[in-house]
Image (cartoon, rainbow, N blue to C red; front, side, top):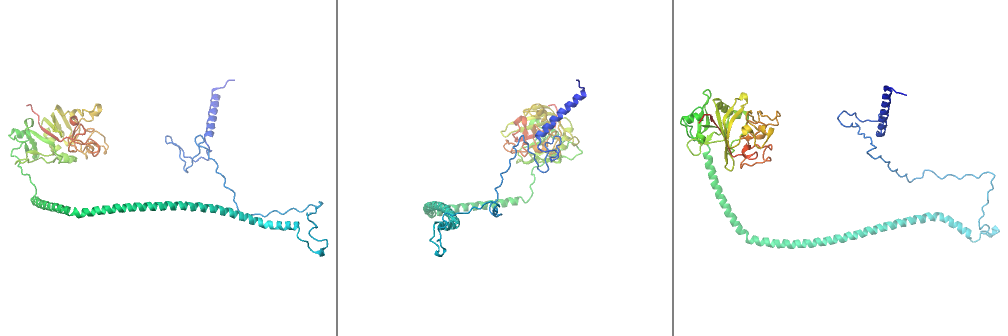
Length: 497
C-alpha cells in the first residue's frame, strides 16, 4: 500500500510531537498552569521566578526527603477504665471455695473467734501489699535518683579540687615571677640612680653649651633675615639693558653688527609691535632666534592654548654682566613663530643634552608653522643630525603602523584645552593631557620637548601622573623613560652658506 507525501509528512510530525511531549514530561516536574517562571527573551538567559520559586531538576538535584515525625504527647488521663459485663442468664455461678473455709470460727458462734489462721494473715498481707508496693517503688526510685545525684556531686567536687590545685600552683608561680621582677627593678633602680648622680650633671653642662651655640646662630639668622627683608621691600628689576640694535629677526640683527648672544628686540612685521627674543649669535655662524628653551625646570609647560599662542616664560637674565646674556626657559609663542616662518624659507636647529653631558642635534632645512586658522600645523623636511629624525620618521624603536602614529610632521598643535591630535575624539583620551605639554601630537609622540621636567633624567610610569612617558623626551636619543636635561629650538632664515 502506497502513501502519498502529505500523509507521510503528517506521520513524521506526529512522531516528532510525541517525542517532544515525552521529553517535556520527563524533564519538567510541574504543569504549565502551575509554573510561575518569567518568560525568557532571546539572548537574555534563563527566566527568573518573581516569587523566588525554583523547580527541582531531578536530573541534577537529589529528591527531597521527609522530615522525621515528632514523638506522641505524654502525661494526663483522659478516660476511666471500662465497666465489667453482667453475667449471662442460664449460666451456673460457681461458688468460690477458700482453702481455709470453716477453720477460722468455732462450730458454735457463742464460742467466739479463733486465733488468726493462715488465711486471715494472707488476707491482711494482701490488703497491706496494695498500699506498701507503691511506697516501696517510690522509695526505690528516690534511692536511685539520690545515687545518681551523689555521683554527680562527687565528680563536680573532684573537678573543683583539680581546679583549686591548678589555681594554687599558678598563684605560687606568679609570686615567684613577681619576686624576680622586683629583684630586677631594684637592680635597675640602683643602676639609674648611680648614673644620674654621676653622668647627668656633666651632660647638662654639654647641653647648655650646645643651646648657647644654637642661640647665637639664631641671632645671626635673625639679623640676616632682617637685612634680606629690608632689601626686598623694593621690587626686583632686571639690571641688564636691551641693545640699541634691532631688526626683523636675529639674522637681520647679526648682519647689522649684533654679534653678541643676548636679548634683543625684533619686529618681523612692521604692522605689529616689536617684542623681546633671545638671539644665539655663535652656534653654527649665529643668527638664530630662540623659540623654545628647557634647562632647569623653573617654568611649567603644561599651559593652555592661549598661553602657547602668546608665549610664556623668562626670555633671558644676566649672568653677572650688564646685559641679558643667559637665556631662560620660555616658549616664544605660536603666533610669533608662525610670523617668522611666513617671511620666507626657514630652518630649525634642535639641540639636546642628557644628564651625562652628551649632546646631539636635529637640523631641518625647512620648517614652517601655519596660522591659528590652520591650528598651527607643522611642516619639516631635509633632516640632518645626530639626534634621530623623530619629527619625520617617528620613533625608531617601533615598526609599521605603530611607528607611523609617532610622526609629528603635518600634525596640528594640541594643548590640554584644545585637542587636535589623531588619537580619538574622546575628551578623556588626549595626548596633551597625558604627556603634560603643548606640542604637535600625533597618537601620541616620538618627541616631547615640552613635557614634564624630571631631575636626574630617569623616571618610571609610577612617577608619571597618567603612567605615560610625559617627560622631556626624544625617543630616538634616549628612549621614552629618560627626561632630557636641556632642549632648545632655534630658527633662522634659510640661505646658502
